[in-house]
Image (cartoon, rainbow, N blue to C red; front, side, top):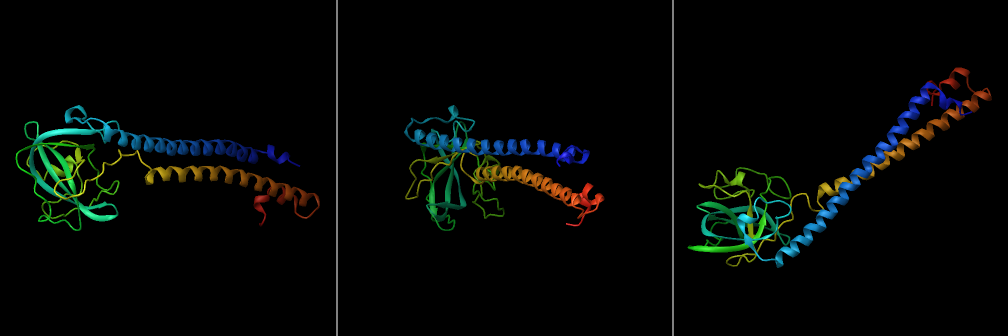
Length: 264
């Protein structure tokens, strides 16, 4: 009754099934490993953030360039405050507001973007406290430059003068008259009544949308594998039923040899 499995047509079906199932399982396992890797990165980033708050601050030059190992580390820098900008559309503790970003000129004039704090409401230059004059030393968490459109960073343009959507050297290069570090710092203690901005986890190290996409793809690939098995058994069952019907004279010999040609 099952000799049809050895026909050329079924050889093709069987080979496809034998290749498709392990491929789907492999892809599902790979996506699951990607999700598990992101979970581990998230745990490591959380532990690193907690450790960084207890460690001694290190000079800026020792922690550059910023990567997953140095992001969130405590850094110290000395210089003089320069141009001040506002960063709109920033949420803190569930409230909408803006960052007060001031450029700290260090190392012969090169500028380090420093978030001195957060204020609620719409950006208002009059409400943003001016930076003190004279030489200062700041301490805070080192952060990688932001990418517009990622992790809640606004990508909109056409902002009023004195505002920037993202904190990055690429975004600031046309707004300030000096070179800018490809990094920024958020102060541990905010200035002048503002709220301190918590350090962000390094890029691709949190349980973000990408992580749950990996988990969703995992389920999809395993569903595909199950669907292939289901369809194979369904086709086999249909072929067997046609063979039985042919043996009982309920269908013609031609239809029994090629069930696909028969009406469903």
